[in-house]
Length: 286
Image (cartoon, rainbow, N blue to C red; front, side, top):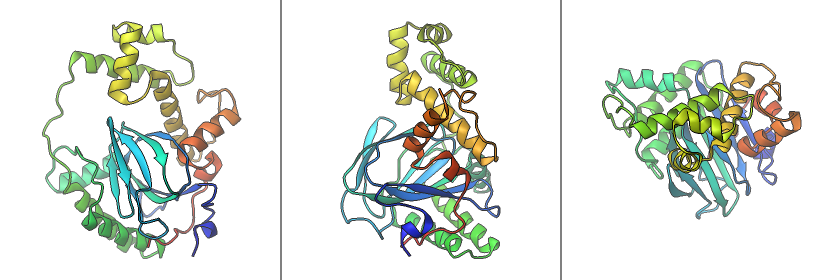
């Protein structure tokens, strides 16, 4: 069955989202990126999978994560951690993708069961056949609407395979003074989503000069303070939509509803209304 049958327009590069009450803490985005360059701040663990079917057997896109550039081919998998920014740099050929979002507490619970104290993925896992097959088995159980027990078991098996790739670094290291200053700026932006925060104010929060702050913040988080705040606003909008709450554009920090919709569509490949109305069925993976 084609992606169009599920409301995914391959030519326009649209995406849709799928959720299930049987799988709390899990969300699947499916779609086609036909050339859209975007940024996304992750509130959860994000596993991006590029299916073999529906994709050209070549390098499909280039993206940036933690200051390094990567390329996606069919069969590739990328894992990104909460609080990190994914930037799509270039799409060479329309890329069909699936993104599995995993709530941090769900993965932490699975890690504790495996005796892993702290979850950390230093690499991005681009190209991992065993992990791909574990994901495919979970995805296919969801797509054919298998029993909740089977879907949950397939998901648990995938999470175990995923966590086998993590590194237990022990207790989180204490941040250095510069990192702590930038973290204060990030928290200040999050606490003031509805207003435009001037750079002088952020510099005072950090105890740095304006120019030093802008450079250091972009180095640490991959975005300017302004762009990072926009991503925080979009994250807050997604959280409201998941709860069934219609976001108010002004309260969310946008000029008006059209401004919110444009930024949301650029980031997610779908409108807020489409995000709030998930698919009832998933298209086949391969």
